[in-house]
Image 1 (cartoon, rainbow, N blue to C red):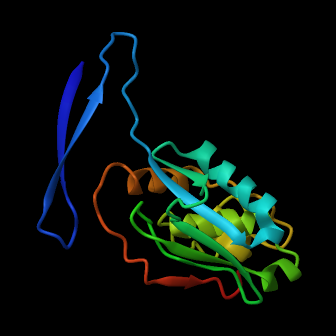
Image 2 (cartoon, helix red, strand yellow; image 1 turned 120 degrees about the vertical axis):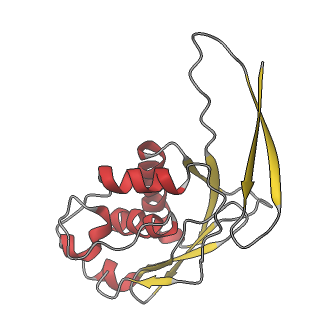
Length: 186
């Protein structure tokens, strides 16, 4: 068995916290990937639960350094989704396991015909640390509304995936989640 000690320093804190990772060694074994697991709660956006679950699946199949799971009763929630009458918006991440951010699933964009799964995946992208890329083509998830009402692509492109992977590549930075990205035109 291989024993490694990794020391990280949280930004804004002078405390180093050693973490011991134990992995089995084998010539055939692939290196262990230590993914960050985040939880979400969609109980305040139940009319969009299936589209939110689809957006979560998109992200979980697109990246390996972070995985998103539905919170169980009593479990800490990292991403809270709320339906409201405004435009979609989200707190900018990357959110960490000790933080909670909010995504507002704005009905205004839904009422105008924008794809709900794309909206949910786009707003989750913000919570994972991605800024808007506007104007942009439909092939860019973070182009949001500039992809057009007919755009139904909920998938991040290679650049967006890579940035999220970097955001969760074992760094111990604390995100400033006080920034809310208002997708004024979704």
